Amino acid sequence: MSAEEKIEIHRGLKGVYFERSGTTFIDGKAGELRYRGYSIHDLAQHSSFEETAYLLLHGELPSTAELAAFDAKLKAARRLPAPILAVIETMKQAHPMDVLRTAVSALAGFEPDTYDNSIDATRDKGIRLASQVPMIVAAHEAIRNGRAVPEPDMALSHAANFLWMITGRKPSPQGAQLMDRDLILHAEHGSNASSFTARVVIGTEATLHAAMTAAIAALSGPAHGGAAEDVMRMAQEIGEPERAAAYVKAKRAAGEAVTGFGHRVYRTEDPRARHMRDGVETLSREMGEPKWFAILQAVVDAMKPYARFGVNVNVDFYSGVIYYLNGISPDLFVPIFAVGRVPGWTVQCIEQLHNNILIRPLTLYDGPEPREYRDISQR
Image (cartoon, rainbow, N blue to C red):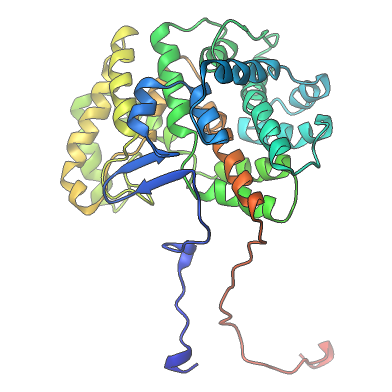
């Protein structure tokens, strides 16, 4: 191949713009994140998951009446068909992400508009899935622990009801608010691995349930969705704040990454992290377990010398402690990520459908030159 014909390879599609999007703005150098033009800081401090999901799916913040109607749609979907519960029962010993992926796929058989890929039908299916996904996670948690699947509480918000169903306890206002904020911060994040996967699938004119199933499969990989679980494991391994510096030093000396630091996009602190940090500090004190926040902060202090290299704390660094303090099993941390991300996956699919084109990148062949086939007797 001549110099003129040289093809530049962008491994992982890094730095490649494959489409336009009116949903999420990310400035990795400045550490800025906006949904539909609204700063993530304003949404985290003043909005709710229901309002933020409406914003993502409809493009504008809702009026009081619009929010009430949207909330009613969400609450109306807080039920799972009996056969889906039977699927969960059958595979109750499997990992929660495998159960979630399988149950979402099976839900397609109970959705009357499964094959309607119009924008309105896709949005409505996404709204229903936003309620059904947390119901699947909560139902599996109950079934695998030999408990009856709890009834949803229609008086509770989306986040508070999820906590109620998954723990069997009505959450404190602070606990519910933190979970609500966590879902807002995870609701959408541009063309990440799972969202890109959803767009590839919906781009083939497959169904939203197929795209969601594929997105969940992509999220299940530890390189994408597993940081929150790993951070809590790290905190437990460190045990005491005083041991954090030595832990970090040993990790760096071995050339190993410290989990919860670094991001594919952000070169400064993940703008979502500060909102979880403040909440973890308050919740850990409220629940009488301040050492977990102290351990995390000690790790942050030990990692400060690496910040100038773009290795900064990300949102999942604090999320795992919130889940842990709420009594949630570590293998549910990634499914909770999925609970928050359903609106984002849905709007990515809607954008793809608006002006659909099959996503089909190229790979540069670097295998053997042309050669002759030889009969097996001559090999």
